[in-house]
Image 1: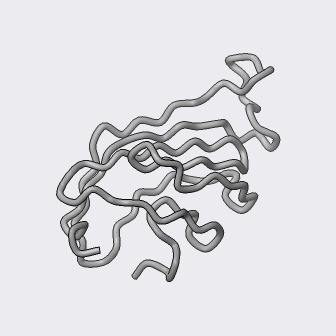
Image 2: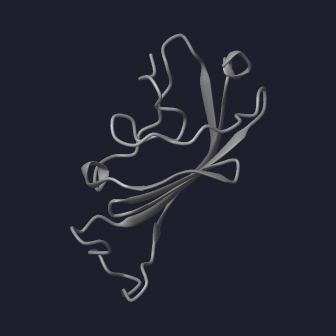
Image 3: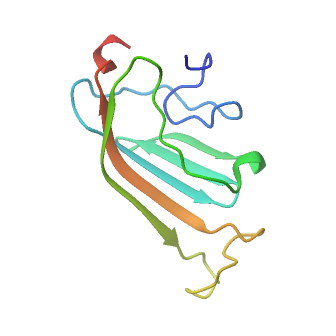
Length: 115
């Protein structure tokens, strides 16, 4: 079960995303930009989260689904971003060495119309 108040696009347990409309029975687009501890999350073009969170400044990218739901993903892409003032091939792109990333893709699941 999704923790209370942590909507789609949230950094669960840390920062809550703004409410937004999820397209029922259609592909939704997610764009997540992570630059060190700064996260910008867009859902279908609308910014739902723009926050700093040191707890998530480094780690893994996870795709999640709630129990008893079916979810599908397509066109997933992750790319390293160049930071202003940094050489394109720098391995220490952010303060602690975590690279700046853009994660983008589409998703849909079978329970959207009921939420």
